[in-house]
Length: 511
Image (cartoon, rainbow, N blue to C red; front, side, top):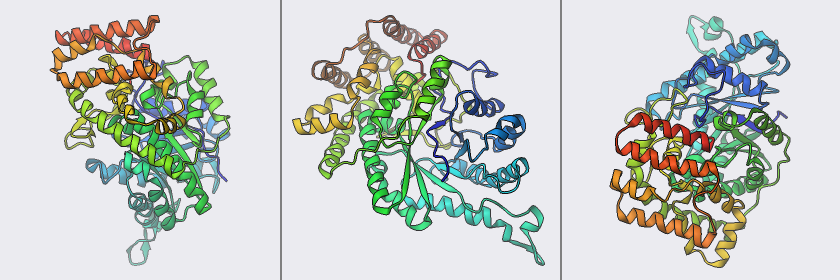
């Protein structure tokens, strides 16, 4: 049996600080190849996700890793000891990137040939897994697996002319199959994930399956509590399915440093391991790696790598029904507020520092992330924008919990163990002055302000959350939030950008 990675380094652009080795503030090109090597060698991460979704991708990464760092990769075999996993664009969603999907798939046999030359015949398959984002049905991942088998791996049997086949020209194509990891990002698909996985299993018959559960995008689209509970439902469903099919399923969770995006940081990883029992692989995003002291980062990654995998909590039907009800209540409260803050979020997001050479997800080019009726930026910019205007998104929608009876409240607390801790961490950065300023700048309605105030009051009076920290960093962040809003109002945008960067440094994450 292969090693199942415990940690996966990603290229999420959530870091406030720029790493010392980067040639510029935007990490791109050769720097991303170096970053992959450093993730393995310096940080001890088991797996690197190589992202072709929403950005230009270097499909020659394996050639560059093996040729630039031969000593390391002779000792640590790519595909056996450490892993490189492609994240594809979803051709059904990202129309402009359909050919990037094809290009990335076509590059996999090239990596096989390179590894054969480097390691010897039959030693390893360096890239054998791909991640499909925004998966909503088993048909999508079945199509990806079959596309590779039929349109890529079986190309070598095509006859060109008069008995001459493709393999006579370019050699035989390996690997013959790839493993597809569905990345499930929307609420309904997370809560019905068993249908996606079982459908794939019945057709493809894999020996095991890795399943990727999103935390950031569902939080942005439906609220933090909806995202957490949807992941808990998904984990329960996956473990039940694993038992019924007698088939191993290894969940991955995509978590960032701030509470809204998962709260996995070098200072909070133990609580995340406790929260998401049953998860095999945790994403190590850029803020985790670059916004904390190196020794602390390396130690935290080592601890995650060596931690015991606890069994997921299997939900009874009545518990699952309660959690589903809460996610609906929360979303109904959360989405209208976000829709009314969308102009503010979008205006602030374009001023945040850029850390990756990602394409814009607007208009014809890609998939603007949407909550209800409005378009929003990527999750990192979304979170960074709300923190920067002094309204951490973790607080939005929280008063919907007032609709729960005592039994439902108990079930909620049992299934979101660190709820109060996550909320308190975010609430340090709440700025009371924001209301008047955002009302003035973006003409935010009195009704929206009143709803946010209800959420704030509920967090304070019912949950017992202290709003606005009293420590130096919290107070500095609150002050800078006011200064940012004032400078934005006066259109002094260079100052605005400076305050945004300073706040991100305090949070140790852009968003």
